[in-house]
Image 1 (cartoon, rainbow, N blue to C red):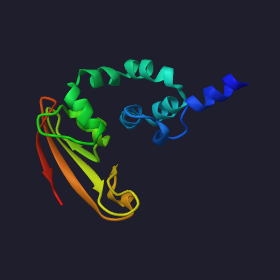
Image 2: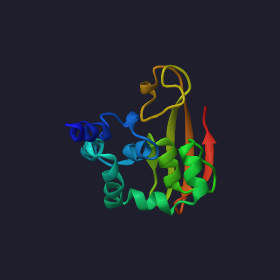
Image 3: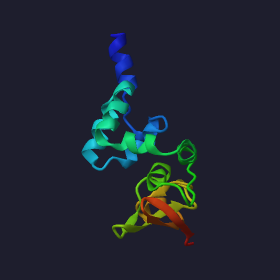
Length: 146
């Protein structure tokens, strides 16, 4: 009985209950089915699952400075694109293939202040946009649009 309870506690029913960096990985999974499956995993199963998706290798390939900054929500010119994904989640909009532009929407007021969302209507308040220019998988420019 105790084993059953501890197994249930190890599984998360919400991404907000996941510890970093596992919470950030959740938002970078490509499909809703994978996100649902990921939440059902216990702690010991998450890293092997992420290795299967390729996300773990992208994370460990980042320099330690970029991983640390991403966990603090900080992104700088010269960082790899995946650091931005881990810091802020998937962009609200992306354009281009080799040279890409990602637009991020950040809630600047309301109950989700400081959160990055896919649609500015998700903020329940005001929002601002940040545009990243990516060349060869590296951030070469950051524009704060609002």
